[in-house]
Length: 397
View 1 (cartoon, helix red, strand yellow):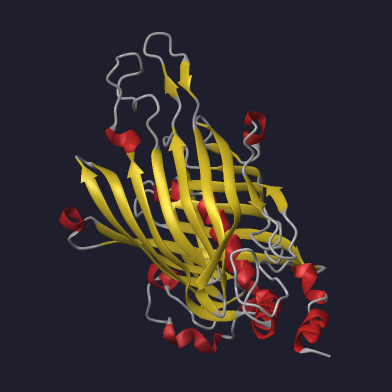
View 2: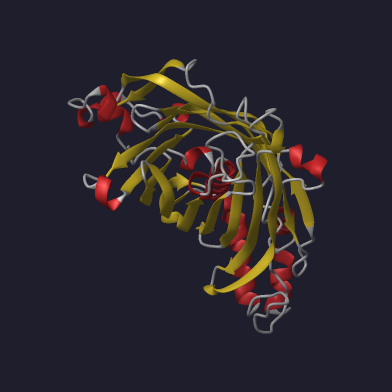
């Protein structure tokens, strides 16, 4: 029996996991499908089996994004729209090139346009919506320079400006459903799956915002942070489409992520991700904070960053009070943001260099460097998809 036949036998259970870009060939890698040898195929197969194994790794979400806020700078000059409106057709654009857990690249653009109303009668002249056009590529784990485009994340998301709701399934009515569409590659079958549910973004009317209290047990002691003006971004039964490989399953998301207008921080007391992987049900509960930190010279250099401290399944991973000494002298707020390396978490930073136009940001150069501490590839991919769905609210100051 040859090495190739042995590998074929081992791949039987892996077929359920949907490994992309595998062609069982002893030849060299080609853009039509396969990796270099049976040895490389074995490595890819092992990587697939490891999708739900915990890893500690830096830069699991890494790359750059360039945001152009054209709706802030390209204003209406026709006089036909309400005073202060962006020009008809002006769009904010979010162009990014991001790699998730080394072997998947997302590159492309999301655009966002607002509702526009006529000046005289107030009739709607333009519908608010997002449009996604993102290329999906897989990379050979044995040689990351070898890369193949396998599909698209594409489609339209209508926005209800009054409620701030992003209707993830609403593009279907425009024959432009938001979806992940993957081509047949090697022996992996083509598939297409849509996003569903609603993401309710920041409220247009800020007058009704109320206080909200967040609690966290740190070092065996309950810590409390109260946000006086909390603006929740809600996840109402969002369904994340599977892919780019079958091993990244369809996932349902509920919960909230709250924005604090006084500090620019984000908090959550529970975002829930539910999914089925290889016949077993999982639920991850994400809690914690994303802290906004401004550079001391931000007024001149435009620099700021988000400092991530999102814990996974905190209740299941609580330690005994023996760790308390490290946090005893911290204030509640400092302890709330403190990173505990013993806890599964997504940490790291997203750095911004903003260009100002008057008192508003007109462009942002963004660099991602997020790290996994005892997280699985599925957990990282699920967060990345959700964060990308919230690309507007999370990047508006």
